[in-house]
Amino acid sequence: MKTKAFIYIIIAGILWGTSGIFVHYLAPYGFTSLQMTAVRGLVSFICMAAFALIRDRSLFKIKPRELIFFIGIGLSLFLTASLYYTSMQMTSVSTAVVLMYMAPVYVMIFSVLFLGERFSKLKFISVASMLFGCCLVSGIIGGAKFHLLGLILGFLSGLTYAAYNVLTKIAIKRGSNAISVTVYGFLVMTLVALCVSKPWQIVTTAARAPLATVPLLVGLGVFTFVMPYLLYTLAMRELPAGTASALSIVEPMAATVFSVVIFHETLGIASACGIILILLAVFLLGKAEGKQ
Image (cartoon, rainbow, N blue to C red; front, side):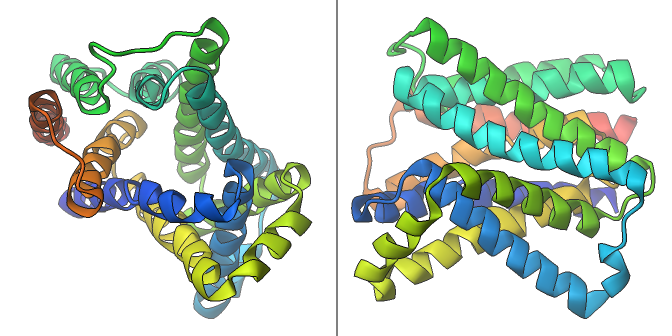
């Protein structure tokens, strides 16, 4: 089961890496980041709710004590996307990516403090390798643009992403079903996003070119949210929160590969070295998990 969980996490990271493809083609139509977040959440909630209805309607039943976790998970998902986007505008894409992907460090610290997980030397080495690899892949080394508020928001995006990981792990440990966690997390995120994204503009923008925008919007929800978050949540039943979060850092590696193959961007030596470091880190985490 551990092997399957590792595969789930890696696939989820690759799917998350496709986000840039959908954003690249949707942005020219006039969709804002918050609007894409709202649509992504809505599509995800509809898909997961339909899946839950078909599989087992009891998945919608929740206990009062679970509600606080579901609200926290949904808010964490929304804040991660919002803070990340704002940090990207104030600093640079590369800086924002690295700041958000500090999350594995936060998660492992939180997991050791609150979930009783062991933080081994091998995990420390693997996380350090991942972070350095992420710096190389994103291009922050040698070309970072700094902005104090942007840096603070970037760190906060990493913290909220870490909070999502830890809250999900706690909820599952306390008996919540992984699918229920995903469904209600998406619901809360969608409601918050719709409140602040001017949803009527989403409809009018999509109506200008429905044949082009609707499939992209649906794909954005299915391939960058439904499938990866479901796989990620299922994997967290078998893996420590810190390991699961660290493995998901394959996303920037996947995003780089897609940019080279699809958008024909040049892959420099630094990016190639970063990809190798991230793959090495995935291997080391697998070894650490096996020993544990």
